[in-house]
Length: 474
Image 1 (spheres, rainbow, N blue to C red):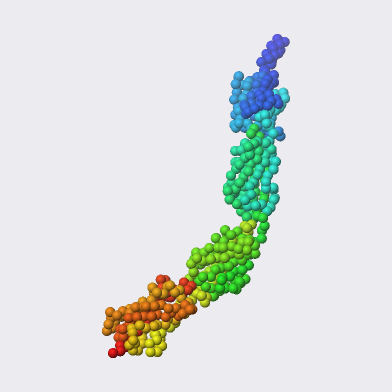
Image 2: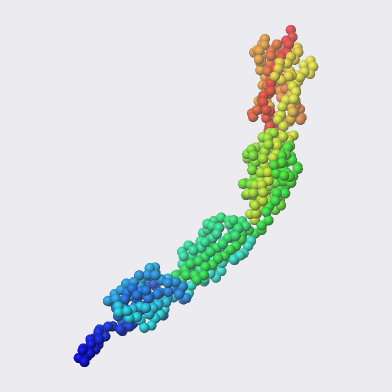
């Protein structure tokens, strides 16, 4: 009986030393439904020393009215492990927060909370997320001008830096950003025109207002550039001398009969962006050219300040850099060949040289011609020069020379007294004086770049010379 009483007392002593009282949350901060102006730590005070590991695992801090995301951070304990402080890894954004401490939070004796704790608080006086009220161009719109600007209107003043870093345009565009004074309307102005006939997409997300409330939903807008989509067509291609429409035949066709002073005429089915011809028109061999436009920019005239080369095949190409005013491009290159062998592009030559003394006698070039007896009256003779084409008259005097090669009186060298043209500029009368019988003379007509030229500016190909003499008469 005494033994039983002793055992009962021992059990009673042991029972009195075990803590079975559950812990309670004495206080927490921020308080329930509090509005906090800026980010702050979250603290919870318990009635007892807590098991730090289990209590931290029971702690949950959610962001957003619907608990969109869980906040990560670090814990610190104080006051004999009765006060827990949670510091977020990043400053808390403005908005709604929900603090949850599960019942699994327990003290050092593994006594858990009786009930789950739930409280709410708000950071920022403004908790309303911003919205995009309008966006221009409209989504899925077409026929947008290439020099258009993009305008975005927000429901409230915005943190401009957060907006500008969270706008994406595809294809990529370089632009300037300009805000109105209220920071509610942003205008994006491209540095250069947008690409023609191209779908652009604007993506806007994660933009914040001045209270750092973030947009709830991203916004996407697509639009297509260009006012019309019909490609330009070359309806005609001519030169001054070739009347056949070279645009109506197959590429790489060869056309003869062009002249070195021809202009090229190109016609189109609609007005053209005149600046595009600078990259679209190519002539090879290369030659400097200018363009002139008429007929409401539907006709282009290509002019060459310097004549083209004689008897040369030129490639004329108009490529797909050509654009109409809506920036539609030519579908395919047009390429033809012209040969500058027209009637006005022949190389001039001397067809005949004659001297009249006793009878009309023709001289043979490159060989010595015997012109018979000299005249007793004087030492002056008239030669008639026939050219194959009209001649540029002022190119002649400095390019015709006479000299004595050898003879009985070599000091009598001869000189040209007069140049007299017949009306057609193809026949020249030369009066040559100081010609002595017995002397052999060389009459030279200079050709080449600096020599005698036709009225079209084409030089004789090379020098032409005649050698002649007269028999002396006693």
